[in-house]
Amino acid sequence: MKIKAGSNLTKVKQANDISILGMIYQNGPVSRGEVARQLEITLPTVTTTVKRLLEKGVIRETEMKEQDFSLGRKAMAVDIAADSRFVAGVEWSPFGLICCISDLRGNIRIRKQYDEPELCGNYERLKYLTGVYVEEMLKESGILRERLAGVGWTAPGMVDAENGILVCSSIGGVDWKRKLVRADLEELLGMPVAVENHVKARAIGQDLFCRAARPDVYLYYFVQAGISCCIMVGGEPFGKGKQGTGDIGHAIMDLDGPVCNCGKRGCLQVFSGEAMLLKRAKALEEEGKCPVLAGLTAKGEPLTMELLLQAAADRDPDVEEMLQTGVRYMGISIANIVNLVNSPLVVIDSAVTSVPSMREYLDQVIREHNYFKEELELETDYVAANRYTGALGACAVAVKELVIRRP
Ligand SMILES: [Zn+2]
Image (tube, rainbow, N blue to C red; front, side, top):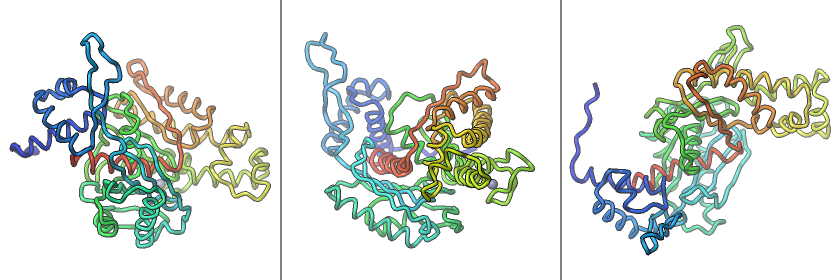
């Protein structure tokens, strides 16, 4: 049994500040009365806290979205002051370094992408370049350094967000162990840094910046070279510290399947991961198949996911068949997790499902394998996959950890 820590007045005040600012972020514009009602905090406490937050400039007074004229005067509300401060988000990805600066609502002001996959294995170089690019973005956007609340950082692998440690990762084919990434970046940048695993960061980004009404439990399923699934519970990713990395890509789907880069056979990412899809497409092309794709790569263009998806959209029969196989395994793995946690919603972040026929097929496979289909009405929601979802997710981690939780 875990014993809960006690509370004192300072702690209570701090907890109230965080929940009031969080509530305004989620629901704003919102009246003070509504904040008090929903949080079950007295109106005088809400009024005092709101006054303090207004003085700090992190929220501002505004008119209600829907006016209630029966009261005879305009109802005043409060909302987050989106451009009062900014955050930078940085992703160390298999493609290189991707970063952006956004306001507090996730509107991107400047973005940068450095496709240098050979960088990926080099921790010191990536760290150094993070510093260079954050400074460059500030300079080019004209945003003053003192208006940057901090930096969110993300990467694939096991991340201990509470202690700021990259526990292990293997980006760029190099194994990293116990990197004190938060402390290293804070020292380098001279500002607060928050860190998180790359799929958890994406899930937080979607949840925080979209502000859609979501069920209490849902899944965020992300496909790139690897495949991960974050279980969201009450607006938070499941698992603290080292828990909840969500790596479903190495779940074995076929005991005697092809060998995965982890050394095991038949892992999910061997069937549905982007690196393996590209490899398979190349092999098919060399066999003289994939007529549409062959036309697209005829000018000596390297085979990319973009070209592969275009060939599928242009109805290349071999590419479609190959992608469908990948989507089928993906759908079965999603249904397996749905059956485990009975989640009524799955948010899917995958380039392959930008092709409408693949999206329809994935929906069909998930539906067919949903064991509780009579009882569980399952919804799927597709994120427009792009290179910046990770960096923007890192911005959201910074907003959550460095602004909302430190009012
Ligand atoms: Zn594997």
